[in-house]
Image (tube, rainbow, N blue to C red; front, side):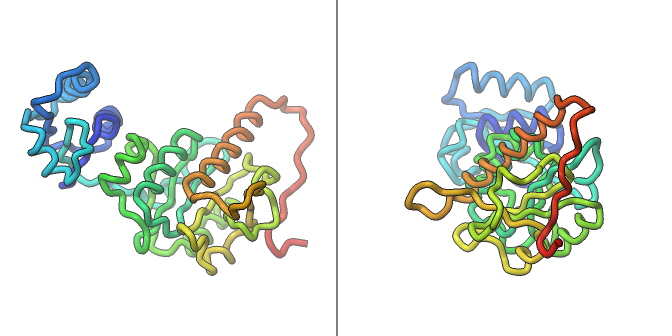
Length: 260
């Protein structure tokens, strides 16, 4: 069993129906409409409720930032890589190459959900776990966006290429601006570690390396901020493609690294 805390994470887990709840604790000292709404959703779902002193919830959550609600749940089941390929239309995935900060992980999950990504790929080692902190930072998006864990990201990218997905990495050494790439095709966006960026082997498995032009003195953005920029550019392109007339001229075929 593991802990979920915070109004949004607990409520979204209840609404998503993807978790098995043991029980949910509510702080006796808090009485307001936001908390009552979560209590009502719990009762509708038939989840056991407990009303405990706030200090007890703080011990359970190991933080005072629980907002008066702590849930005891079974761990979220992870998908297989192949599960992310099922669905209508071109697939758009996000792969994280060793993002270690749970706040960044949560923020990226939240953005991926908001931008309409079809799934997120995480690595099993040297990356932040899907912890209560990351789930809280995702504001509940972690309960909705499909997530797969892989042992080897480079191998996973090769599998995606076999299914005709473009693998595009975000790297400050990239030669193409992020808004020049055609995200309306089947593709996976790969983001690297805080500070160090993409691992060399992962970078070599990318068909394209994109960059975000920087007008100021700082060379790059935080990974969650950079991810948000590119994810929403992809979302913009994909929305525009849905409303284009079918008679529009076909776009020029993209070429990957080493293409002629």
